[in-house]
Length: 146
Image 1 (cartoon, one colour):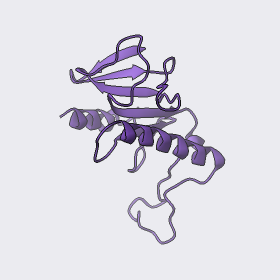
Image 2 (tube, one colour):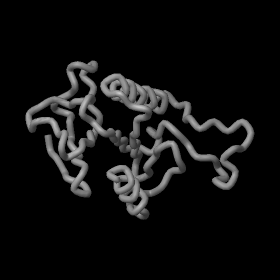
Image 3 (cartoon, one colour):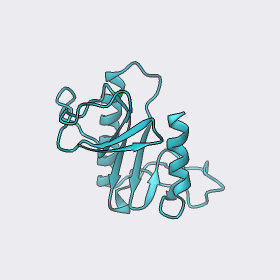
């Protein structure tokens, strides 16, 4: 597992080689752990220790969510937040599987996750280009670490 420390409180790990065998062999693209709760270097992904997870998709068409055409009117009548292509539905299901594994492993009120698609980050907020606006993602991690 490759690890990167962030803000001296969070550690980001690429867990692909070591899925969580207790949770259907799931392994998000990036697992985020508190620096005091990181699994051993050769350990599997561990949803029971994980703070949050990040899923990366290369194609913009893989984005499970979409923004309204007019961002000033996000509550437009008949607007559906979900993309309905097969790949988008699959990716939403994947995020849900990770969220369920996370929630079942810990006593939590909520689970945070990031879905980053083709240079457009998507949480359940508006999309943004994390290359042009890296401060948004950095600010999220800073707030989360606090």
